[in-house]
Length: 403
Image 1 (spheres, rainbow, N blue to C red):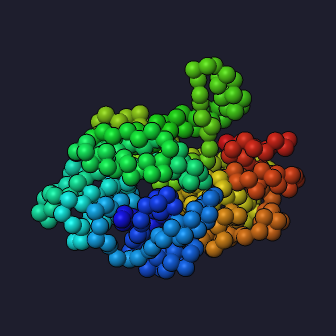
Image 2 (cartoon, one colour):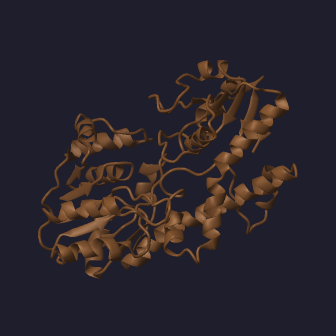
Image 3 (tube, rainbow, N blue to C red):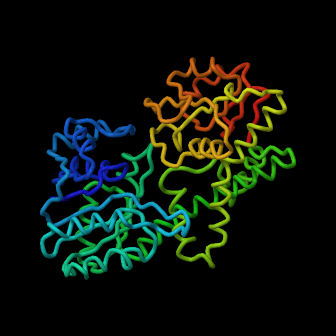
């Protein structure tokens, strides 16, 4: 039996996937309300294919509880934020989960950490807990998650996986566990290498996004079309520039690269500047709003609306979203009034939030496309007659402004 600790965006799909493929699973989370919701058969967030996977897992007998279980295998999938001052990973949630696991884990149990951490975190923060508790009989494993909201179910099935271990025999057992559902290649290596590869994957993407965002700023300065330039450059067989955007959110690309900056401040110079570039994009968009309002003679900020609150399209995940960053920046400048709408966010989470597209559009004269949800793509004609700042180059109507 597998005890999955932490039933959030990663832990829940992992638990459901294992259960639906014949593994006995009990999911544990400290959030009583979350556990109660799961126990009545409702997922706690929206995700394509998740409800169907949930039903398959329920039929297979998955259970949810706030209690840690006595078993031989634990999977820890809890958040790993970073200290915004030092940029170092904050492993407090992982350490707390490990301490609780050790209270019930039998001798020889395997503890798999799926949470993304910086290289050396398990050695520096987790292994000392085992030593202090005299539980060095526990087998430590790091198998970093590799899925993204919006495509979780497919990626759980098809993405390659990395398993970091001290003992290759334990690695073979954990590999067999993941192979119960994973159709991708599963590589077994040492723990620190597994830690580093996950952080490097997200850092690679963050640096490339920053390059695209910097190009957007350069092209804006000299009134060039960054999208046309990127399209032509990408015709070269060895060039693949990503697209610029209003910023980077979520819990991976906006966080993980900072781990390397925090741990290697004198070495991670390109990464540091790239993250600063991405973090600066919401302010860049806010300034573009100001420039366009000035050009159009607009003075009423309450007639400006931000379309999209989530950090990416077609999900309900708002973690560190560029829109929230922009609203925070506006508040720091002692300004308010921007209207907001997102079809995936049904509860009020910010001021001046709308819950119907037509009502939102009737309340604004200036629309800023912050997220490229399918809804806005399918209703782009409704922006006719509006001032539009398109942060994703999806609106082709004449006069559209771009970042």
